[in-house]
Length: 340
Image (cartoon, rainbow, N blue to C red):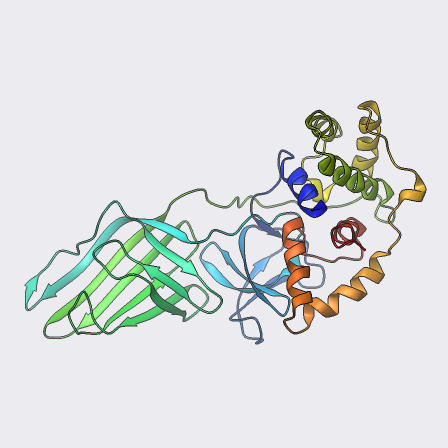
């Protein structure tokens, strides 16, 4: 359970991001968005140090389904800044903020009736989404992707009328979306547009400044603070946990995963003052980042397997989506969580 202890401890630090962010993307420039987890068909891109990505647990071949401001598709999770993933919503919910268009049945104009108190609910899956409309309209309509931000479905009947109706959904996951209904028949003619506004908390989209570590070659202090955080979390002593949080604040750390080595050195001093002893050099994690990365990358990039599923679940629990050999803090946290 140690990985859950450190994840909970890290998330409690003020200033932690509540949505995934792209990292510096060295050598890439743009994080590609793919139509699915296996092909090379690029349907969009996200630039470096952007926040607001909502990353699902629909993952394969090192890619996960993600939503960003209306753009959706599969992204390479190694391009994300670690420590920024928040739990993915089970569904997106929208309220109808506007309706326009026309609807006629048997030549007579009809209102577009639905329960104004119920939300429009869209539940993502790996290769489709399920659209549920307010009563008395249909539920669990399977929609498939038609572009970087659009989804489509065709119903064979509409509220008991055996006439096909085509539905388009655009900008899913964004703060505003559009839902359109089309039918062209002598019995039923429909050209309706529903403007949707997302409900609930929206992901934080503040642009992250590039992270620079003034001492990139040495991470002993940060490795040590990680081990201490795990120990404090596992011990479960509230007074000690509060002392740890106070020390983190005193050291000026507002983003746990992107703490720098000088900040970690200051944190060790503050922890000593609080009676939480620093570890000696012999306590430093022994497995090198290069060795761990060499072991885990083939698993992440390989076919689906129980080992890959367990590894990705561990990384998500830690809020880590990148095995970066230039940032041994990540490797120390993964190594500790996996018991290596």
